[in-house]
Length: 391
Image (tube, rainbow, N blue to C red):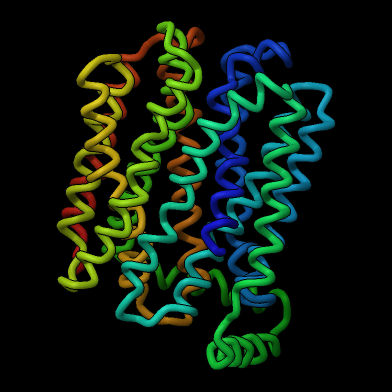
C-alpha cells in the first residue's frame, strides 16, 4: 500500500516527458519554457524539504504521506484549469511539493514498520516506487492523451492519487510503541518556541554534514542527474529521430521497470553480506556510460545500455536509502537527515533537467555534448562514493 502512494505521485511527475512535444504545441511553449515542466517539479523539492521533515515529526510520517497525495491532487486540478504555460508550470510546482513530502516520509514509515535486519530489503522494495511510476506513466500517458487529451491525462492520474490515499489510510498501521516514542520526543521538543525549534533543526542539519555523508550525498546527486536526464529527455530525443512515442517512453523507463527486480535483489544481498558499498559503487559506475549511449544511439548499444542500467544501475536505488540511514549518527536525526537527502536529490534532479536542457541547446539536438557531460558527472559520482567510508 505504501508503494501505491509512491507510484501514484511518480506517475504524476512523469506524465510530461512522453507528451512534451504535444504540450509545447498546446500551450505555445518553446523548448526552454517546456523544460520547466520538469525542472520546477524538482526545484520545488529544494524549498519544501525542511518543512516536510519538521511536519513529519509533528504530525507523523503516515499522515504526511496522505497529505502529500492530497497536495498532488490539488496540483493536478490547478493544471487541469491552467489556461497558460505559466499556470501549468505553477501547477507542477505544487505537485513537486507533494513529491518532496512523500520522498521524505516514505523511508520513515518503512524504518518504523520493518525489523532492523530487513531494512535493506524493505528499502529496496520501497525504492522502486519512482521506477514503477515512471514506467507506468510512460506507457499509459500517450494512450490516455490520444484517447482523452490533456484533460484526460491530468484527471486519470489525479484519480489514481485519490485511490492511493484511501489505501494508505486503510492499510498502513504504524507500530504503537514506536509511535509513542515519537510522540514523547515531539512533546519534549514542543516545550521550545517556534524559533527555538527552527534553531534546533538547523543544529541537527549541521551535525549531519560529516565528510562521509557529504561524499555519499555527492554521489547520490550525480546518480539523480543521470536518472532525470534519461527520464526527461530520452523520449523527446528518440521521437526527434522518428521513434514512436510509446516505444520511446518504454526505452527511457525500461531501466526503471527492471529495477523492480534489481533493487530488492541488491537490498537482499546487502542484508545478507552486511555490506553495501561495492554494490553502490557498481551501480553508480554504469549510470554515466549508459546515459551517454541512450542519448547517442538508437540500435543495439541503446538496448544494452537499457539492460545494464536497469539490472545494475537501478539496483542501487534502495541501497542509497539504507546506506544513508546507516551513515546517520543518531536515530533521532532520521527525519532531518532524510530531509537533507531529499534536498540533495532535488538538486540533482533539477540539474538533470535544467542543466541538460541548456546542454542540449534550443533545438534539443546536441546529444553528444549532453551525453558526454552526463557520463563525466556519473563517473565523478562514482569516485565520491568510492571515497566514502561506509560498509
